[in-house]
Amino acid sequence: MPLPVVAIVGRPNVGKSSLLNMLAGRRISIVDPMAGVTRDRVQALCEYDDVYFELVDTGGYGIVDRDHLNEQVEQQIRYAVSEASLILFVVDAQEGLLPLDQSVADWLRGSDRPVILLANKVDSAEMITELGEFHRLGFGEPLSVSAIHRRGEKELKKLIVEHLAPFSEADAPGEPIMKIAIVGKRNVGKSTFINALTGQERVIVSEVPGTTRDAVDVRFERDGHSYIAIDTAGVRKKSKITDDIEFYSFHRAQLSVRRADVVLLLIDSTADVGAVDKKLARYVADQYKPCIIVVNKWDLAKERATTEAYGEYLLTTLPGLNYAPIVFVTATSGRNVQTAIDLSATLFKQAQTRISTAILNTVVADATLQNAPKPKHGTRELKIYYATQAATCPPTIILFVNHLSRISQSYERFLLNKMRDVLPFSEVPIRLLFRSHRTMKNANKNIS
Image (cartoon, rainbow, N blue to C red):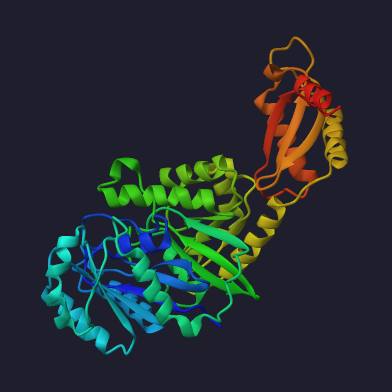
């Protein structure tokens, strides 16, 4: 049984995103005084009194979008309302009843969905007496709330549970087996990729760069398993970030990388790999995240280059991700999108693999026989006494050595490459940590 959907609807700048953040208990939607920040449907999985549902934030109804995406924003609102089991209709208690509120009310009456009217921004008890005009909207007495100050939160949650009681038998959704972040520079095709993945117009697709602003979590099913794809805002050069919305969007993209199990770095095959692509690649590598380089719009570029030649080009321009597999896709038609998801599952499995200490030490011993450690400063010989795997995701290997200062970067790279050749970590980042053998001896003494 699918989860019921609770959609948050209202004109621009009434506090819909703040309401979603309050009910979800964490900051999900970007909140900014400028109207029209939210464009896509931003969702959060919620649970109150054992009733599970998807809470969906929508853009402002009737927004005059600065990038002329009015119709696309309203289409996303219509999608949310059509799927909703309950609608939270938000008005602004401080501004009072406006003509656009009446337009929203007239439209919602035609949707034939139950509606809870919420008067937001009631920051003091004295304001409650000023809400009578909202009765004219035809949805009864509004519930007074203040999303910023969490006023009315308990009452609202109780009302939501009462309306969703018929859906209380729905099973708790299973935890997603993998979270996939889709990142890239602006207008590279991330939203088109998400829509191809889910089979619906889940996020707005436009030729306007920077259309996506929030990091949008999209839950989808494959072969009976639940996944989450994270559509992130397009990244641009720091010097070109023009307002707070772009600033927050950039940091949301970074957060999405950190909380993902696998990252898909989308590259536009019709343009040169630029500074933003390289910056993102470095960030993904620094976070030790399994990564697939997804070359999009390949239908437009394959006449000018082969996959082999383009792969060599990426190895040269993105050396920090030389272990990452490459997939060539056309998101507009869905070509190879499923291949990227299947490969993501393979990488996630590699990152979760644990190797026995005996096998690991055999690999290290063979490596040192093949290429004896060369000391960094050329005095005493560098010795590796012992190796053990300390963690997974990423695979983390601790090597105990005689002198930490004698480890050269070149020998560290040699060990990493050797491990990728022999161990089942060939396509994911490996974290090597070096410790003094005295640390190992002290630990053994404490154990005994």
